[in-house]
Structure formats: C-alpha cells, structure tokens
Length: 357
Image (cartoon, rainbow, N blue to C red; front, side, top):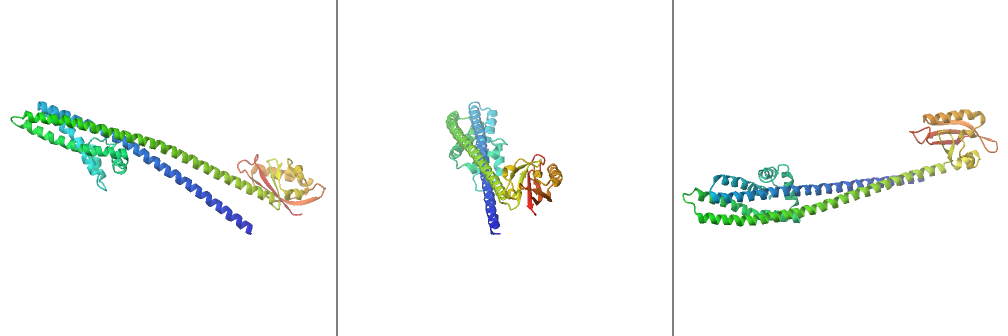
C-alpha cells in the first residue's frame, strides 16, 4: 500500500512538472510573438512616417515656390496655390500638437494628419509611433527637428499675408517684396536642411528597427526551437518512463505474462510464466502459446486466440490445462488484451495466465 502511494505521488509530481514546463514554454512563445508584433508594428510605423515626411517636404517646397512666383508676378493663382500647399504643413503641426497631451484625442489627431501630409492608411501608424515610440533616440531626433521646423512654417504664413497685402496696395513696395523673397530663399534653405536631417534620422531609425526585427525574429525562432526541443524531450521522457513502468510490471508480476503476436507466438515472457510452465525461456520464445496447452484443449485455445487477434475483443478468464516439461499438467486461467487497438491482427497482445491448479 505504501509503495503504491509513493508511486502515485511520484507520478503526480512528474505530471505537475510536465504541466509547468508546458505552460512555461507556451508563455515564452507568447512573449516572443508579442515582441515580434511590436517590433514589426514599429517598423511599419516608421515607414509610414517616412512617407508623411516626404509629402510634408514637398508641400513646403511647393508653397515657397509659388510664394516666390507670386512675389515676382503678383499672379493671384500662385497665391492660392501657395496657400493650399502651406495648409498641409500647418495641419501636420496641429496634429502633432494634438498628440502632446497625456491622453490625446486620437480621432481629432487622425483628422488633422489626414488633412495634412499623411495618407489615410498611414495615419494610425504615425499616431502610434509618436506617443508610444518617441523615446527611441532616432524617432525622438526626427520629432525634435519637426518641432523646430514649425517656426519656419508659421513664418511662411506671415510672409504670405504680407505679400498679399503688398500686391493689394495701389503701389507695391518693390524693396519690401525683394526683402520677402530673400527671406523666402533663406527659409527654403533652412527647411530643406531640416527635411534632410529628419529624413536621415528616420532612415537611421528604420535601419535600427530592421536590425531589431531581425534580432527578434532570430530570438522567436530560437525560443520556438528550444521550447519544441524541451517539449520533445519531456514527451520522450514520459514515453520512456511509461515503457519502464510497463516492463517493471511485466517482469515483477506474480502471474504469468507473455507478449504474443497475432498468430499467438510468444515474443517475450516473464519469470512467473516460466515457473508456471516449468520451462526455459528459449523453449517458449517463438512458439504459439496454445502449443503448451493440453492436447484436448489445444484446438479450442487456438481458435480463441486467433479470434481475439482478429477482433481485438478482450479474452477474459478462459480456463485450460497446460503441459509442463516433465509431462505433468497445470490448470491456468487465460486472459488476452490487445496493445494495438488499431491493428489487432499484426499488433502485439498481452496474455496473462493465472495459476488455478
């Protein structure tokens, strides 16, 4: 009874350890996949930021170009086009300012960015990149440069109003217009330099995120491989443990036991069956079990063993007389069960013979 309890406790501990290992492995896989998703989302957001920066740069360059043409010709069509082009950087600025609060109004931010330079599909990714990833060095550098450029965008709006006022006057001041055009050239140089620095910062960030994505992929694959290996070893250990328990039970059983094939031939036997039949192991291996039955019972036992192998149904408690090596007889109660429920005919069966002499 105590031995049975110890075996039960050992089995429970092994089961608990196996479950803990399985849960730990699944946890590692989940964490690794979450890391991969976050890194890939960051990489996708940085690419959306690149696209938005490109549109922002084109917008302020076009605005300066048309402002300069308006300053030179006074053609109101250039003024209207400059005002339209300047609208995108200004709305980008409003969108960035709307992202500054601790809890931004994301729907309002999305509308502002979409009116500005950001594509509708990229707006959610830019929004995620700004508040959640702005602490990353390269992203933070790009955002700092973006903030600095706001000053010049606002100055462009002021210069637009000044030019419009000059050309509405009866006598535009050419010196004032020349001064504004010089200032436009200076702003264009500054904004182009800042746009280049922003682009380079984002590009460096993208490269860093690409390397991080590659590293994360390697980590995820390594974790998956390691967990798979651990689970395989755990399963293999369980199989070996089950096999050892079976053979221990088979060898130490107080009743005769034998492994037989679909034709009834003995494949393996334990010491109890050897003692029961009073024969050596080599006499039993390879011969049909019914061969050792008394001649009057042999035909019936052959049929029962063959039928059991064909159908897979358990054979329970069939009594027969068995012949020993010295010619004496012993009575035994035979039971047979299949180990392979899917292939009864070619599988292995366990025969148990209880001595009822």
